[in-house]
Each structure stands twice: as structure tokens, then as C-alpha cells.
Image (tube, rainbow, N blue to C red; front, side):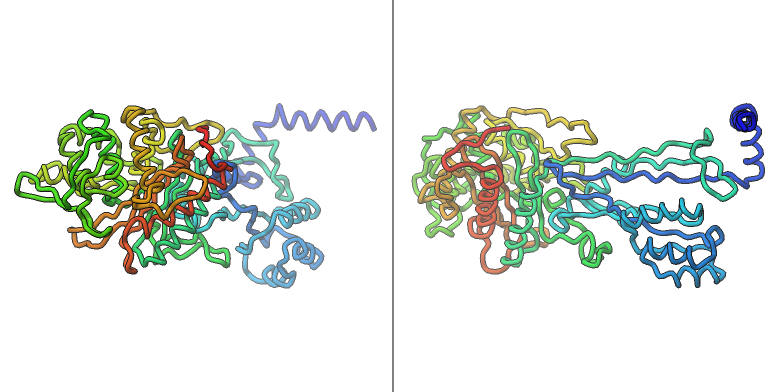
Amino acid sequence: MGLLFLLAVISQAKLQTVERSHTLDLARDTKRFTLSMVDRAKRGTILDSTGKPLAYDEDAYELNVRFDRIPHCDPFYLSLAQATGIPATEFSSLAASDERSRVWKRPISSEQYQAVNALREEWRCSGVSLRSTGRRAYPLGADAACLVGFVRDGIAQMGLEASKNKLLAGRDGLKVGLTDRSGAFLPMRLEKESAPRKDGDSITLTIDSDLQSAASAEIRKAVEANKADDGVAIILDPHTGDVLAMANWPSFSPYNPDGTEGDLSKNTGFNPAIMGVLEPGSTFKILTLAKGLDSGKVHMNDVINCTGELHINSAWRVRCDSHHGNRAHGAVDAMSAIAKSCNVSAATWALKVGRTDFLKYVEHLGILKKPNLGLPKESRGLFNYNEYAKPLQLATVGFGQSITTTPIALASAFAMLGNGGVRIPPRLVKKIGASEVPTGQPDRIVKTQTAEEVMHCMEAVIQSDEGTGKSLRIPGYTLAGKTGTAQKIGGGTSGYVANFVGFVPAPNPKALILVMVNHPTNGKYYGATVAGPVFLSLAKAVIRRYGIAPGAVASAE
């Protein structure tokens, strides 16, 4: 008995070593026992900054049955039905027909997957196989759809799913080997043509799911209540440039309630945060003041007598808005001018700085550049360098007109004020796999003292009784902000863009919040009344999320 066992071992060793090459050559020539199997790569997961999934492959599979490779008997059909939940009569009737194979699109769960694999082993059946459906789950749904994108029929569309597809998709492998006479694949006998699969990389974002959901809910309420075209709410960490939330409305569901991918025929996935270019309006006055102070051509105690309009070269004039009563603000210093949102003051500051230096400053702020967040179809800001009426253009740019930018680029420009005058480019992708994506290069825009002075002016917008944002206070907290209402004129468009930008809390802020509501048509259009309530709700969300105590100064992480 021992001799027979030894002879069997020697024979098998000879087959797999000395005669292996000859055996494989015969198999290749006849193609009778060779088999090529695609080893599907698993698509990478998109995560938020805390590790919560924003997009991941569902643990579901499709059943494929080759009827010429399965036992044709009732016990087998019953066993397969018990494992899959598909009626046994369906298997038996198809086996009796001329149909060679069938794929069931009905998802097979992970538990059923285990049961089917056990059945295959028990019956030594090569005609039953399972493959991943490749279907993606999106836990935040419409709240992050324009940001994350979606995958349909194996094709990545929109958002990060599309722009980072190569990283997420990975690379399929190929197993080329032999099968035994029953058709079972022998993985230990792999040919050199085989290639290992590479699963897709996971991508970790800077987004915080809680803040993203809050921003989406609040901007949706504002857009719908004010019958606006669209709106965007951005929450940014000024100390790192990290985008904590970037929500827009309208959005879309990446799949319908029944679990199938959604119909996008009525929504193109337009994301105004990165694709839209809008005038910043009066919020821009704080950036104009920052440049004026930093250049030494404007001082906090300088007093400007606002009569309601400013004449430029006797040929043009700019006016202050009259929505607070008489458009003439009278004698105002820098803090009062920001609190009352005086156009005449902002135009005067810009003219004092001068066109050349002011345009260098605008370019330095990055508001005319693409955001470079890694998303598809990012836009750049627009400015007409060949404008005929250059002095008038400079004056109007001072209070946020005659220039357009994307909301995310504008938010990044404002954020530098909360970081001591140092701008850090916005970052959306935090990690690829286990590798950290570095933050952008810090770039000093204005001096620390300048940033602090402007922040105090922004505090007056909310904390002082004459401020345009006085209705947006939170007891126990010092907030800083600026209202903005930009009028859309020319290019076949009209109406307003209601804006609000602010910091939470004002000293050493944890977050900058920017809200823009485009073309409200329900009677209200001023920044304080349309965009301000969104800021207030999101400021409270930031306070709750990070546990910021009343009177506390948020720490920069």
C-alpha cells in the first residue's frame, strides 16, 4: 500500500514538473481544458474626512447559469432555488429549453453568495457563477450628487467618480489556467499570461458629511423659498483650505427610490460652486478695504462723506444703494462704511489703490483662476482687461461689480482674512489610498494687522446695531460677516445675486461660510434677507459640530 502511494506521488510530481510544459502545450493546442477568467477589480470607495462612505460598491452579485454545465435534476434545482431565492421551476424550465445560459439581474446578497459557493462545491458544478453587480451606493444622495457624481452601467459620470475614474476603477486581472474534467478551475496551475488585478484606490475627501447635509438642506430651502435659479453654500477651513461642505441646489438623486440609477434628463449635474461665474457684489468690499489698508493708501480712521453718489472724471458716477432709506450715508469711516455697505467708500478705496496694483491684487487672490479641486468642468473668473471706461470699471470692481468669479474661488479669497492674511488654496481631496494629499502652498496676501482690522469691520456688520447683518447674531458668540447684493445686468440676463460671507467664530475662526443665491424672484433679493438666514443656520451647525463653547476662540487644527 505504501509502495502504491509512493508511486502515485512520483507520477503526480512528474506530471507537474518534468511533463508540465508538455501538458500545458497539449491543453493549449486542444483548448479543451484551458480557461480564461477575468478577475474583476473592486472600485475604490469615496470617503468623507471622518471615514464615512460617500460612494461605495454594494455587496451584491448577479447569478449566471450555464445550462450545459449543471446537473439536470430536481434536487439540484431545489438546492439552487434555496440558495438564491429564485424559483426552482424557473431553472428546470430553462434547462429543458434551448437556452444555453441566463443572467439574473436580481441582486444576490452576500449571504446568498456564500450559499451559492457552497452549492457549487457540493455539486462540483462549474455552470453556476456569480459576479459583482458593480452598483454603487451613495449614502448622502442628492446632498452630494453634483460633488461625488455617479456610475451608470459601469461608466463613471460627473463629479469625482468621473474625474478620478482611473484611480477609483483600478485594473482588472486575468486568470489563464487549466480546468479538470468536471470544468472546475485549477488556480494552482496559472499560466504566465495571467495578470493580477489591482483594486481601485479609496479617496478620502475633506468634506464633513454632517455639515454637507446641513448645507444642502439650508441652500435648498433658500432656493425654493425665494424661487431662485440656483444656490450654493460653502464651508471652508481658513487655516487649511479644506472644503468642509460644498452644497448646491438644484441637485439630483444618483438613483431612484426603487434602487435604479436616476434619470438625468431634467438635470445636467450643474454645480454652481465650481462651474458658475457670478459677480461677488458687496461682499467684495471687504477685500477692497484689505488692499487699501495694506497699501497704506487707506486708513481705518479716514472719513469719507458719502452723498449717495460718486462722480468720476465728470463723465461717470456710481451710486450707493437706497434699501436702508436715504442712499447718502454721510460721514463714514472704514468700519461704518463696511457695516452700512457703502458703495461710494469702496469705489474710493479702489481708485486710491490704482488700477495696476488693484488688478495684481485681484490676480493674487486667485479669483480669476480655476479652483483646481480635481472636479470636471471647473470654470475661471472673467474680467475685461480692455474695458474702455477703465476708471469707472475700477470703481465698480471695488464694490464687486464688473468682475465675475466662481463661488469656491471667492470663498478661498475671503478665507485668507481668517488666517491672518495668508491664503491657502482650497483642497477637496485629502487622501488617495493611504497617501496624504498635501495642502496648498500658503501665500501671504495682506499683513496680519490688516486682516485683523478688516475682521473687526466684519464683526460690526453683525454685532453693531447699524450693521446690515444685525439680525444674524447668535447670543454668546462673536461672528463676522458681510452682506452682498449683486445686480445682474447685460448679456441677456437681469435680476440679482444675494450673497453672504462670514466667519464662525470671529476670533481665530474655525470656518468661513459663503452663501450665494442666484436670481431670487419671490420679492426678496438682498443678501441679508435671502442668503443671511442660510449663514445663520450653518454657523449654528458649525458650532454644534465642533463643540465651540460660547465666548470661546476656535482652535486651528
